Image (tube, rainbow, N blue to C red; front, side):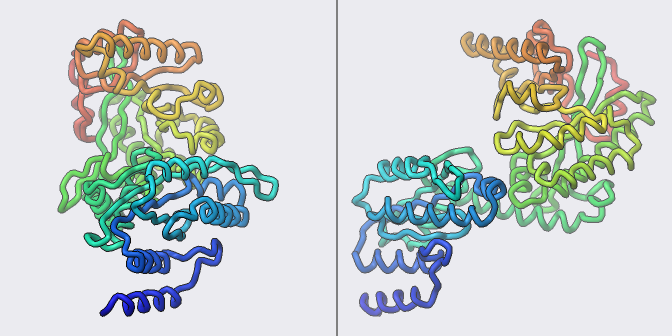
Length: 454
């Protein structure tokens, strides 16, 4: 087919697809066809594709309502069209995602800078002042070497990587596609496994694939184990052991943490009560991690905790709920955490100091405990005196802060005798780490409790 005929064919295809009515921009299908048409017509040698999304737009939509959220998207589209009139093509791919296509003659760094500046300028909508933040994925390719759609997919893979790694901008590298494909496969396998194991998960019994392991929490002052942290594991029938780093964030992304989280709550409580009966030690606590996303449905979360307590017969005072620091969810968590505390459960912030650390939040949230992140402990006996001194000052500061606020502390990641001596000298009591034990199966907890303390 000759070039003119190809051009005519593409333009006819574009006309067959509707423009996005909300933004008056081409939709994904039309946008891709339009970009291909422009590149072909203008004999563009190299193309830069930037895919952007509005960060936390779902949260913005929840706060202002769908009508105003639609107005924001419409305003964003108009502003993009006005500011980036030098773009070869601009279209809305879906939701709060937009795509800009540039010729090779632009300064890519300047365009990224302009996009960042564009997003930070406030929008005034129906009496609301909205300030946005965006993430970007970027891919570049020689037009003759790669189809436009492949270049756009590469930019989307870069955006996905930026999201998973907390980056504002990410430039595509080949490994990102492999990672995206692997993530998709994990998500698909996870859905299948949840379906296959639905009966076991619903009834909080042992599953063929999902199971819990427990890491002891040791009290130096009492010279005994005072609790266990329940940790979720997945043994896929074909993949084998899938690490939590591989599947937990995927479970959160595809919205299944409420199912897994409810099972963990019930199974952990049943297991710890069984341990009480076997060992005749009835004061061992269980630490249970709750994902920030579970707080999006507070009624379901509260129901899961209450059912775990009722079915197991455990005293709520022996349950310690661990939450991670999160700038997006801390505000919405507060009222639910108050209800959890009212049941009698304790609340701990996990990995303190590595996320959205706020001293103000420590005074406003109903907390009992901080968990010092293992990254600080790891540096305490570093051969680099600067690193070890910095880690020492941070640890001392955290212990002092917790003491001033009346909070207990669990020190995670203690692996060596030297680390144990350092944190003990700093006043640490509750300690968790490989020095005492690696995570163990439920069947191993009883024997561990009966072992002599090192």
